[in-house]
Image 1: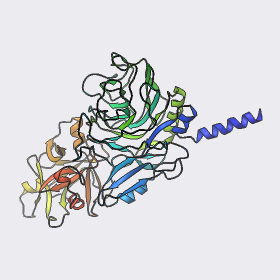
Image 2 (image 1 turned 120 degrees about the vertical axis):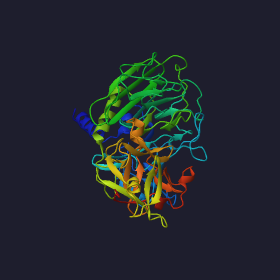
Image 3 (image 1 turned 180 degrees about the vertical axis):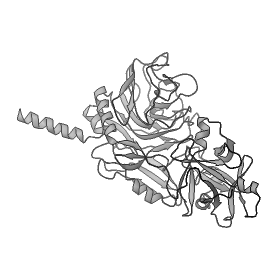
Length: 501
């Protein structure tokens, strides 16, 4: 009797310090892939969580936990990326199977925007959050951004059983296809119904197939050629619109049975939104191929957006009890929004400002607009009021995220700087979700050490940049002419001053 009590106490103590993958293993369904940029998913893991790529010299460094089994050491990233831009180049697999996620190659639905057809990498600064009081970074997926591993090890194939969970940002989504995490084709092509089993988060792909109650976003399953909230018909009123800031999304499948579960990642338990048989028309039995993707569909459909913090894939069909224990661990991890998405010199909401260029030989030029077009131009003190107003902007709380900023034209009230097809333009606010996001920018200390740089909230690897006299959201060494790395740090740094008017 005494030995049994000691054993029980020891087991309880071990469970109390277990990570999600320790919990899955104890339930007989071990992780075969484990990805997170925010924390270790095993209690004893101390290896790299992710790698960042620095724009100024293409150097890389790995970001590890602060301690064994702990949260990410964000200070390593901040110090490494200071004075430059950074991208997330690898998300490491913590399971030991080598199922790392890297830049997604072109697929049947889309070639990425880069010259070689690969998707974008995520900007490393796009998704800062707090985890048990420590700042960490998630993976902010903007359209055309994606990660993939087409040569997996140990991921479920055919009709084999598996489980998945992911923690997402419940407020960052769109109608694009497809913000997924999970099992997909190994050739980046649509090879038919039932060849995928991935968690999807968003408001659907616009086809009308796959919806829940309300207007979304919903947790659904991408099973290839369909987003499913349940079985036929695939509108499932039991699949609710997500309202939590951080969401735990769960998907699991085995022969002719699958389930969707979800909950608030900061508190409470999981709810089951669907648990039943497979859809018809090629989804029973399944034909899973075992590749792993993040942020895209199986054929590289890459128009979606969302934010990923952590997720795993298991061997075997986890029990509800195991998943409930994982949810308790996620809640205990303490996800919370950061106090600010910005750094560097502050700008007061409601103030009026002008932006001066810092690139040598252009330091007497300012950001101005003429009609809808935005350019740089000299603005002498002797200029008339019209030009001075065109070079002046009223600072507003970010239309798409109030933790950042938007800039309203002084001479055309109600019109804001936004990006459209990568160009910066001035347009009237139509109050659409897309406009609000396109018109939101986050300030950070100037990349060249002067003033401030303005990072697009919706494309956080891209910054205000002047190039050949015009303004763009530009990336360092991207596929466009205005992504030219020459003078990039100077061209994206501006001195913010009191406005001309």
